[in-house]
Image 1 (cartoon, rainbow, N blue to C red):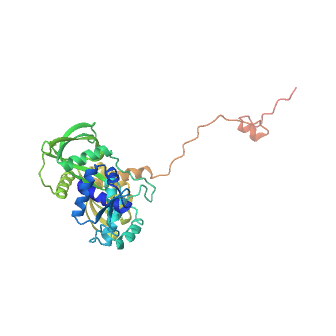
Image 2: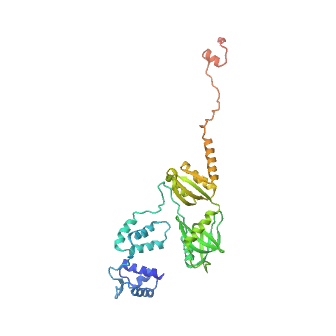
Image 3: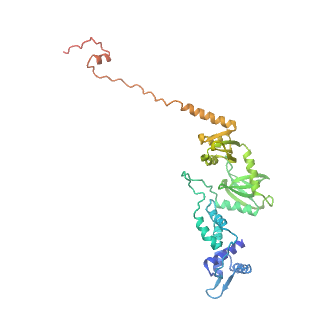
Length: 354
């Protein structure tokens, strides 16, 4: 925390010039004595901060002083600044990015700042005017989870598993993983590996006792292992040829993509995973002839049966329903033809009128 406060103190002096110890204390939410100790620490570290006595005195930096990240090239600076356009970034990260921007060398700051305005990452609406769904995680819940992970404390979560009502459980957090704007908490429960979706944690409480977890962890390896176990349980592996123009649409419905290689006729050959046979049938049916399932045979048979049933439905043009017969109406017979249509003999003469 002190390192962050020292950086904030330098930035305050850079941005606002001379400030009194009392003003710095209020801005940093610490005591005046703490500010004085921080000023001494900065001076000892070589930061050119000096004090001015008198009624309008205070602390200031020598003119022209900057905290530069001299080892940062243009592409690295641009990557940091454009990262702020992503989804789900909290106030702490936004503040950190502002500090990085302030510390950039003059040669990079203007160019990178202008370039960052030319990138938009993950907007809420795509070209098809479909609004993307971003997981909403309460800030208080995420803060408790993050604190427990970093402090190495146990955690109580009110979690809603798929198809089950929310329930409290005590876990040992290991780390946080973000994949495609979805957050996951890797943990153990009673010694068994568990993976929790952050969006399904309704509430969280950091506990004082230490978590039962190893001191060091390879989070990337742990995530790969859990993904492999997840995909091997009750999932179906599918090999499919797909039109490159519909590739992204296919990937949005798949649980995972195992491999991708060029296929025949300009198509792509993909190995993907779906939750079950029903899920695979539904997903590939959306693509019509743009995708062909190669394996497993059960999937091909299910798609064939569905296509055959649809073809049978549309084999013949629709028949118009027959109109029900209505009451017959006749006009007065004016001649032999009319009389014949009304059932009168042709040689029957009409009686003379009296």
